[in-house]
Image (cartoon, rainbow, N blue to C red):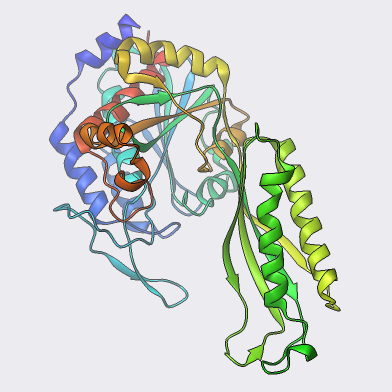
Amino acid sequence: MSNIADILASFELDASWLRRLYEHMHANPELSMHEEETYQLIVRELEAFDCEIVAPIGKYGICAVFENGAGPTVLYRADFDGLPVTERTGAPFASRKVVTTADGDTVGTMHACGHDIHTAALLGLCSVLDNTRDKWSGTFIALFQPGEEIAAGAQDMADNGLADKVPTPDVVLGLHVMSGRAGEVMSKPGPQFAACDSIRVHIPGRGAHGSMPHNSVDPTFTAAMIIARLQAIVGREVNPADFAVVTVGSMSAGKAINIIPNEAELVLNCRFYSDKVKARVYAAIERVVHAEVAASGASGKATIGYFAHGELLDNDAAIYSAVRENFDAIFGPESTTSDPKTVSEDFPIIGQAFGAPYFFWLIGCTPRDVWDRAVEEDRVAEDVPVNHMANFLPEYEPTIDAATRSAAVAALTYLAR
């Protein structure tokens, strides 16, 4: 550990460069798998370092390989896509960018999930390692990933030869900023983020004039019965000691006030920490859907399709133990144990592409006075902006410092001489 502390102390990162980079990214977010300008920016920044740039991998994936003699190979991943959110932070560098989607909708764009912090921190880590080569040995791979928000970018890189284009890592690392005391480094072994799937349910019916419901099989009524029954699955079929979420994200049926439609559609979002619980819940969902459609008297059958899959993010215990020891030594009381979170990530796909173990931790980004007051008054839900909200803005200094230094500590746990 003392060697890691010495390495961190031996190089002073250009804080003004890093902040300019972060603020530029924050003001210019791009939606998932449309990040051409961000891709070009990252490649330009990497050209300042002594590394091999492997890009593009897939549509916009980037790897920078820093070879420095014999030793372990460590891969660290950061994502860089934004969200279709109109920013309401009031920051002088707030995004004012508006784009038109493929569907013709006009939306604001924002880095509402901290991916700008993630990317800036990884470029900061590249600078640290590039300028302290006499103090570490091995191979470091900086992986910059598009399309995390739609769970497409990691798979796109894996499907387009990631594992063949860069050395196989011994460990895969990454982090995410989350609401919490700014600058805290929060980590745990085992499940950190939930597995998830979205489910599209097509409900058949028989349309009729709105004045003649007796001539119809009303799919909106069937959908309502399904929604009511779905809410009982977690409450009545899942052990209270286990975790499961079944959310009805959207319902659509009909377009006219006086016509009972022929069909309806539900889109669900489900999350779990256990494959066993997931299998039980999915079986229950399918049972409920088919039973309610049959009970409605519809002549057709429901169709159920699964998409937007997210793997369980399950931290390797050995990597956690090794890195956490150094987190505790470097960050002291700011190194804390995190709770499992119900959000999801495609980060595990990177590790799976190589068959390599991984570790993923969290960085608190909420101003401490805001967080502490909200916790004391039991008003976290009301007073603390969280990821994907229009007013989500990490407190820059403590957040970027903890993100960059924790990334360096984790990588140097394996690379330091």
